Image 1: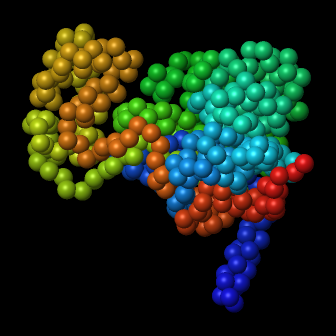
Image 2 (image 1 turned 30 degrees about the vertical axis):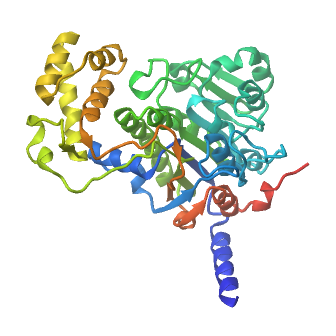
Image 3 (image 1 turned 90 degrees about the vertical axis):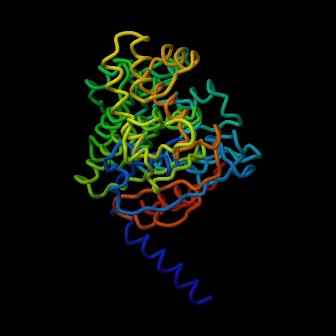
Length: 436
């Protein structure tokens, strides 16, 4: 008993030590990003990821109140409020009690707050940081709640849900941005909020992003610039929203591109944190999607002899070979002027035979690189395999950089994340208790 009390006192003391040292908190959520998503991206791209440069590393368990496998609504609620709830619910307990979230609590304590996403801003994860609805499908209601919230910066998609809220936006002091160019040139104004909705629905995937749609790193940089302008403390949640979408599709190539963009945004935050050492940067996920299974070891003849040998049949294609696929596919596309030339080049380069269905899928795709990659990997007995198109109950990683990072270097429950954040910034976690 004495040992337990001593441990508790040591933990409490360490939290007190960091109280006052932390001015800003930037929380990154890779939607659906499991540890293997990170490993595959690092290995295939052959580069050190920004998220792996962080000080410390731990794991987070993600189950919801009514299901071992959470959805994004319940997971976002846990990460934003410190409470478990049922799948589908946002900012509410199963009995529909409204529970306060981080942005509400921090706003009431002098913090500027913001969210940056590549999905609709009314989607489950961002909604968890401002909304309170019984069903995540109530996006029109969530849009109104966002407009009435204390959020200072909101960047993402979903303009359709705000068409009838233009007067409300003006009344609540929001400047409304519609293009990347408007965002880049925007200068934050005292007493004003800003909302940038750059697509009617979700933003396009990384590989299909239009010239009017900013990248996640660009939105993150601008959000930090605005929130930090007058030296007030701030909290920013940044979501790599489409990691989950590509994982549901079992699109490994698309997934890697989304993780890379997410990681570039993390790099923006780490650069700010290096210059502002009172900033805590956290990177985690709401859940794992796809049940991605990897085997980096045991490289076989396919790797040793390169891509000149067939990859079909019983051969195994490992991650090193897939890394080479990326370069080969780029060359094949650049040297083909039509679909027939592309078909012949693919079959010659990779020594495979494409079916009419596979050819059509490549021709019809807006991202031919991803389509070709998916076909090739699908023909191989690849050691990077998906086990489902749905969410799983796997633990997800959490990376921490800055003051107080060591408090995230163990196995945590997702409800521990907001509680620890509040304790570190010297706001009692009892603030998470429902208020009338």
